[in-house]
Image 1 (cartoon, helix red, strand yellow):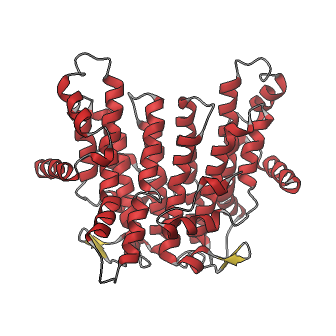
Image 2: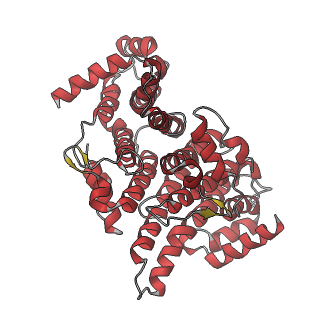
Image 3: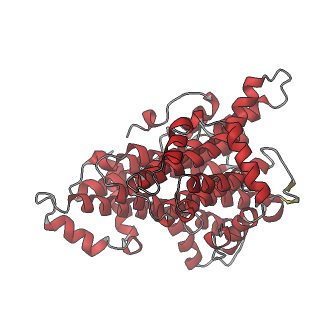
Length: 225
Length: 225
């Protein structure tokens, strides 16, 4: 998905090296693949979803860098390699993740082709909400405060899982599908019942999109990749 | 500027308390005031610039929270009060700043009224670039690596200053002015020569906007506030 070319090695070198170290570490890329798959599923062009998919991968990566820091999970290894702060130091890792978060929004805003600006603004707003204090960060916070407690219930575990993983995943699918539909709704060829019905049934509200189904699709794509 | 109402106290409580603690700590708000002033200067409505101004203030605040962390400047006090991590812990402070950065983009995308989506996408793209690895973060990185060196030149100090402060400040002025002009260019009342000339002369490229002039205006506004 050309993440290699999205963040180039330029000055200041160390921050871009640090960003690229984690971004190109070869994770599963489930979320970004699902983003592209959803786009193709409803008849959209893969290239339309590519910047959004890269943005989701970038946000996922930045959250891992911050999660691994000593003040969080204090992990030395990630995907079998030393964590970002072990290689570049805590200060560089902290800032590299900040830069990656900011880059995600820059990339959607500047690299997306074939979508109306109206939809891009909505996409950016929704994605930002999914990352923030009621999304990804909410999941991380609850995770921190439940750590060490013995009476953690299924409800709390579900909350963490939904916020740390599924929200970003659901958002990426929903947004791209929503965007593509809007763009293609006047096109007879692409507006076929299959795609429309699928979306009307399952994707009108991202909260209702089956997480299990998403995971199945992601795993299928992952094994095919 | 109603930052109080922009980030409400909701669940999870601790993250929103932490975000509000620093956001409402009563800084100088030079950058956001300049953003609004630039808008009014060219005949725009203050309310149009308000979400962008709040976003700039939010980004400034998040950069201070991360700057104060033990792995960065390790500061215990900020604006005469204990720093965010001293009150809420390093992990919460780290995540609160992440949530603030994400909120800035969400807020521009969802709360801006009276601008075309085209301009909003451009604004988001430019602002994100100003925060990232070639903007604010670049300034922080160079700052870190020059620390302790004895032969720091004027050029390097200027680089840090421009990237840590002026880029965000310039961007906020340029973007709002640029946006307002685009919106009002067909309006005879607002398209007067004064505003047009001022922008043509000084603001067509944010890099060329006099930083000294910006600071003078900011200081004037600040003393009036």
